[in-house]
Image 1 (cartoon, rainbow, N blue to C red):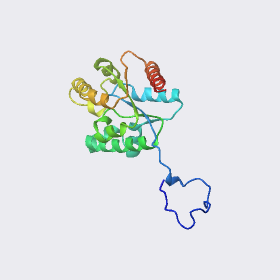
Image 2: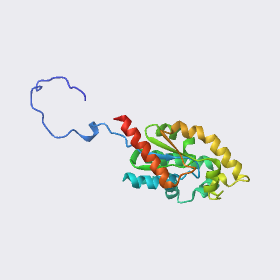
Image 3: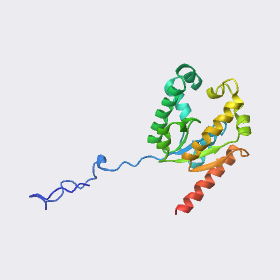
Image 4: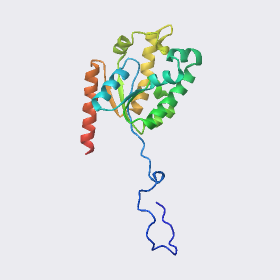
Amino acid sequence: MVNEPAGDDAGAPAESAGPRPRADRPVRPKSCLVIAGPPGSGKSTVGSLLAERLGVSFRDSDEEIVARAGRSISDIFAEDGEEAFRGLEEEVIAAALAEHDGVLSVGGGAVLRPGTRERLRAHRVVFLNVGFAAGLRRVGLSTARPLLAGVNPRATYRSLLEARLPVYREVATIEIDTDERSPDEVVAAIMHELDDRLEKAR
């Protein structure tokens, strides 16, 4: 608050006792609980279940990209290229982080953008880790996943996991191993970690 210099009417009563204008109040940024991880980690399924358990809303960045572009992610990759897709993805996630205070699932490659990693620092990020065998079994080498549609999807998936692991861990505040857990068990593990951190913060 800026202190105005005293004038002739410094002792006069204030003209209004009402609330200060909204513009004078600091705007508190919203805080998401972000779910990140590689393909096959169960981000959308776990994110939706977690939001239900927490009693908050759920958003999925991939779904919002498709809605905004009016095309599937595979089509965006094929027609515009990965770089254009990543740019759109970063815009969608930036908007969601700014306006959403529930659970947000982000695409597996979203953390590759430095701008997105920087924005995630203001939020809690749950990294759903998955091993090669379990992830491959869940993904099933689906051609609907553009990055796994090449000549050797097994090798591509292994390289993807190895390259992204340190990046996921860079942004994560919680890491959950999903290999031997059902979605409900993953959610229970996340809830336990959240409760434990809340207890320690008291």
